[in-house]
Image (spheres, rainbow, N blue to C red):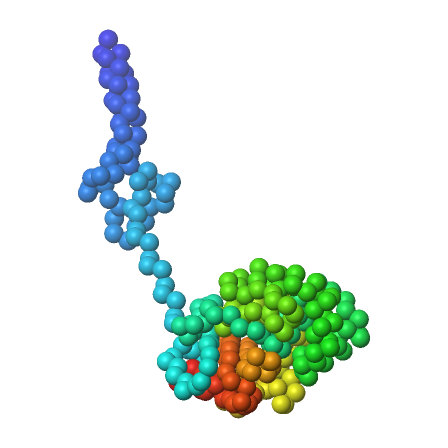
Length: 292
């Protein structure tokens, strides 16, 4: 009888120990709110080892460094001139623009629109003939009017301006009579320049070609903006100006240039008696003041 009692007591003792082991080890896992249950300093727990791991605050998002000013940037502009003048400068990196209070007033583009006529044709014609490429060169570098009328027809005339407005996000511009009479505001002209510069207008295949033509316009067509730039920046600037003395007795002289990180447009209308150089000087004056 004593052996049986002793054996029974021994079995009960072993059973108690086996039942107690998982409870003891499991208590630290279950009691996650207890200070005593926290892991020792320097010891980390994986998510599998804890049902409620400690959450650390997310690090603050890094602040983007401020961009340096573009070569041409918003600045106070004052021009002592007769007639109408307006301007818009646009940062190509951010799309942000600034301009005169009347930058939304549309005027006739004259030859400035030729840059769009070339881009519109090239985007829709992946493999233009050598003859047409030669005419595009004449239209951009030498501002050939016959070539402009030819591509105005190929582009569908006013349909081309409708594409310009839609593709480049213009708000003040529209077709009117002929290519030279297209109405574009200064702020829309800057958007057109940005649209040409970023490749939307001519497409990826022909954008570099078109910008190269615009950088190599004839010397007598690099008036206004380009001569007012630092010498180191003149060769890299693409330009297409427009000028015409109309039968209403007024000069329309417009300047548009695309730089590395900026676009500038300046529109002028004034008495024809003052001559073309009057408008050219307004473009140059605005350019110089936007470098301040």
